[in-house]
Image (tube, rainbow, N blue to C red; front, side, top):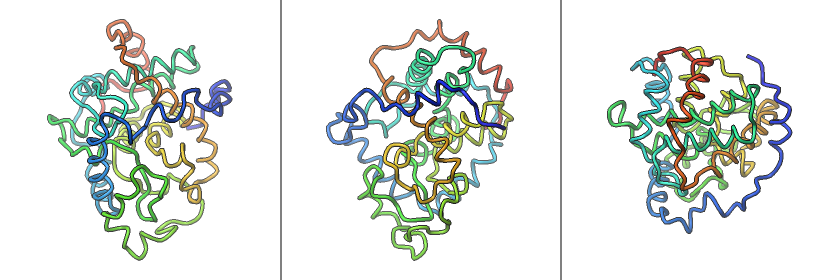
Length: 285
């Protein structure tokens, strides 16, 4: 599957976000700070290499349940992301806000894959739904990071990695750990969560989304890399090339979190068409 060649998107992606960094992802002054801090304590403590491998074995086969994209989207109504310092609205609101923000800046059919990524990028959070898997949120949401090598001080709440047993492992605590220089993120094991799970859902169900779309879905929560530049020692040429798409997406993922609720009924026909274009009617999850 080849990388998309949307010139406008690729050029625009290198433009820095307009809003100040302190406007979003402010973990110190957020009214949700206590909740978010508690989340990351458990996330960083429990996301060890061994636990990640167990989760990947359990869920990467995506063979436990069948449902459509729309059934999964409806599930988001019941999920509030406890790792998010910017919003406590249901996830379906964030999904449509992100999609519409992207669509406004990049209108037209050539960018429809990017619109759809905005809608479905967080669908993997159904892992935490009580009527499906009821997984604890520490292994579903939040920023992702490599396991099997030294944790980065540029990650959010890095002090909590002291609770992770891998911080004291003779191999996993070393600079490269089990990896080699510039091996590429596709060859790295990341903390388990909705990014990797949704990527596996797309791949295992034969989605025709372009490579850039799948890459954004898989790594959109890897903020230590696409916002702080951490783990560059593991990045391949492909990762450096794809970085522009992550940065373009990041702006819309963050800055679309507004109090206004999208008019869901008016928007659904457009996005239903995109789902039919890029996905089969029923998917294995």
